Amino acid sequence: MADRFLRFKRGKSSRDVDRVLGFLVRSCYRNIPVYRRLLDERRVQPNEIRSVADLPRLPIVEREKLFRDAPIRDRIHAHASIPHCVRAATSGSTGFPLDIYMSRGEAIYRRALLLSAWRRYGPLPLPLRVVDVGSWVQGTSGVDIKRRTAASIVRISIALPVERQIDLLAQHRPHVVSGYPTALEILAEGLRDFSAALSPRLVAARGELLHETTRRTIEGAFGSRVADFYNCEEIGNVAWECPRDPTILHVHTDACLVEIVDREGNPLPSGAEGQVLVTNLYNRTMPFVRYALHDRGILYPPSKGRCACGSRSPRMAVLSGRDDDYVHLPSGRRVSPRLVATAVTRAFDPLAQERGVERFFWKFQVVQDAIDHLTIRIVPDVDHGLAFDEILGPALRGLDPGLRCTVNLVDALSYEPSGKFKKVIQAIPGRAAGSPS
Image: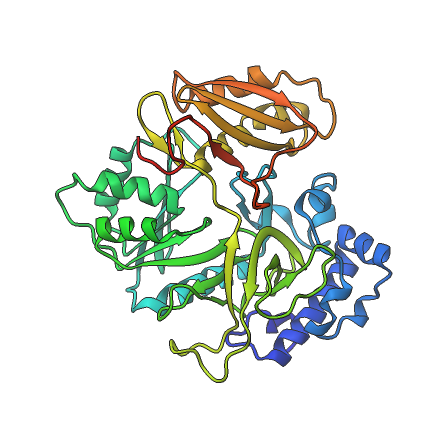
């Protein structure tokens, strides 16, 4: 099988993975200017990357460094037609929203891999009904419906009132409910007063750390199994929760490679905590090679034979990252930190379009220091002379008319004593970060 088609093989062997990796690195160098510059700076010839063992010779790719200043054409394959690409977008909750491009074949393969991960927990019917409680849905309705031959997918904005979210769930009767744990927990609390049973076959938690108390709340409300999926838009499904041991994630080796490295990018031994890097094994339209997710995790020592669940995939755990605090609004509503962080990022989109740039990129941190007030710390990379308060104020009042904000321009953002970074911090005196309103 030609290497370009081997990307789409299911059940890749280690030799298959080596061949795909070599093909993707050669393709990056020949067809994508930003990667060519990175490899030239590192003085690495693409033909020198012949196997997974050669990965540490490649540079770590940071989203802001790789994609912020480069035009779209420098980030995607030279022969890709942008109008014919399938586009996905990160929520922007990290502060660096990113549009991701795939061919139609790559997008279909990505969806098939996610479906295969979901099916680890039991059979699912076709056509499949999926409701995704997402962080950002364009349009005033807050709902986006896509109907395909094998599945219908309904995306619901978490900006909608919980009652409206529940009405939509009842209307579409999904087999699978997917969403951020913080959004699903709020939805679960609203379901306590809902008379009809929804009982999807699976609740797929993604995008944030899933704490055990949150899992129990969601399971109790939906009456369904909750499984944790380590997902990101750049890859799709990176890893899925072991059906027999919820403390373990199995790496989705058809989709990606996972490395755990130290600060210098050197591989760490099994069981050591470090930075998580991922390499996409199927997307050559817009590749991600040694891409930093800014999460911390571990890879467990290889097991002898199959896991108790039947998988031979590498085992990992995500230890920190994606773990922000809820925000409590003056109305009494508690909202997911993803909604607040995305609102901050997207507030600048109209101005970016007006100025003819793709995005404004700011490192930021949101601190709720009163029930009606947020302090937003921003590290501006350059001085655009923007009136930050005037831009962010209306966006946050869109979440609650009584919400005010103060913007502080700073040189650096604060970290937890443990060394963890939180994008959204709840610091209201006397209130616990995860407490209900």
